Structure formats: C-alpha cells, structure tokens
Length: 95
Image (tube, rainbow, N blue to C red; front, top):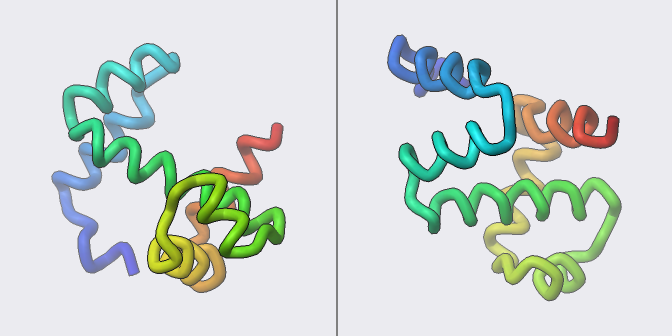
C-alpha cells in the first residue's frame, strides 16, 4: 500500500521523524511542518486506535475522543487491514 505514496520526499520525511530524539524536538518539528488541526487529527486517530484495540465500542470512543463514527470506522479498517503501523506503535507504547 505504501508504494502509492512512497517516494524520495516521503523517505526524507520519515527519516526526519526518526532523527528526532526528544518530545520537545518532536513538538517543534510537528508545529513547523503541520497545522494544529492536522496534528490534533493524527493524535485523535491514534487514541481511537488505542481504544479500539481495548475493544471499546464506537459510542464509547466517540464520547471519549469526539471522533465521528466515520473516523472510528476508518481507523478500525486500517487497524484490521492496514500496513500494521497502528499495531506496531500501540505495542511499543505499552513498553
């Protein structure tokens, strides 16, 4: 799936993320590279994925995160059938 958008520029973006060492560095980079709305949307999707992995219901997730059922459904689809990115991050965040 990533082949559709993977190119030298996205390689550089991913490498840039990997170069950041602290939470403060990540905040500074995100603030420069994305809008606050984009950052908040990504954070919300990650929280939706975490709650889905804990078998929370759509109404519970919507109430807790403010996410629409369409967003929850989209995250669920990628959690179940995507490239595995959510699962990798959620597992590593448990440690």
